[in-house]
Length: 210
Image 1 (tube, rainbow, N blue to C red):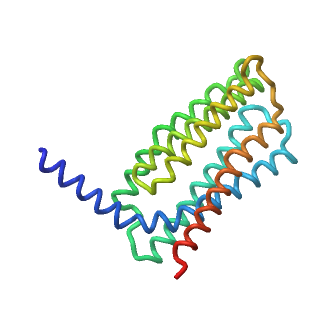
Image 2: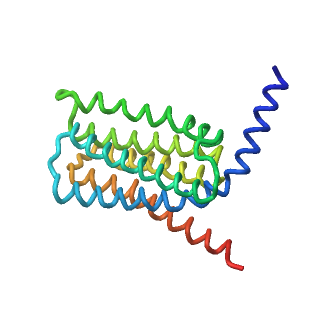
């Protein structure tokens, strides 16, 4: 049993080393894609959907999240085909397994937002704070199978949720409009990802300068 466990660990480490280049090259474009998607979603929501009910607000951003996942998958697939590397390698499966619990937990907010009695402007704020914190946890967990900096990126989201909770909810809760909530989503998810993606692209090019 211990021999099999050791062999599996060695296999995982070998696959991680072989796939590290793929993750490094794909993570920058994926972050930029998600960042641009978040900023465009915030702009669209602020200008065209300033009075969305709480549930519709959540569904609006859920569609953007799905678009981000699909776009990220396409970028990863294109990079894997270009490099002749498998897309669904063992490390990739481990990353998905690390992301899944926190991402699934974030969907629990849809239950509260779907209730007319529970769904208020303050409920939306708390839902956003939970999304930020859980997303940070998911990114941090995935960082154990990816480049080291991704774990710090996860901590940025977790820390931001704590700061925002203090600012918006203590000592007296501040009521944000739906327009403000769109902007908050754009700044956190759009702005953070775009900044991180640009940083990765710049440092990647710098590291390859002869």
